[in-house]
Length: 156
Image (cartoon, rainbow, N blue to C red; front, top):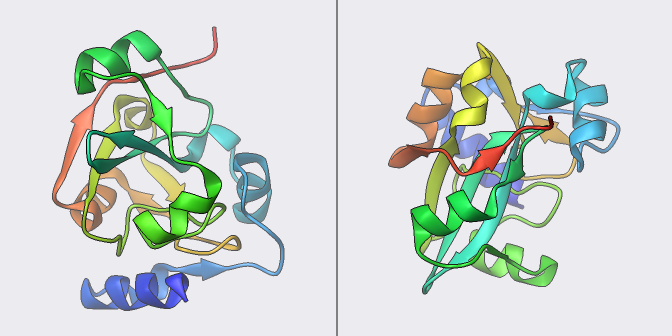
């Protein structure tokens, strides 16, 4: 299971105790926020896109949306999300548990500037009922190599 890969990945970074599993679903931003007890914007959702022959995983704040002109300027292509059935074979995690940890080769990880508003965020951990509270430095370290970008917009 993908969560077991993520747990092993966290253990390899001395953070085995950080992965939380819930009795309820955390597959959407709203469900994850309820499960961990935080504001929805602090959920670090991982969005997946086709970029050339690779997958771009963009970790963004829960209230952020892709800004198409910014995306095109960054990646030189239109934003085309992976289909649900493509997620697990290409990323290694199924929809609802997609995260930037322990991913398949061919995935590039990006952290969006919308996350910088928070001291800690809650990304999923490979299943539809898991998360971990991480500082931005911890998130960046666990996602390495990764790149900070600005391709999202926040609600007005």
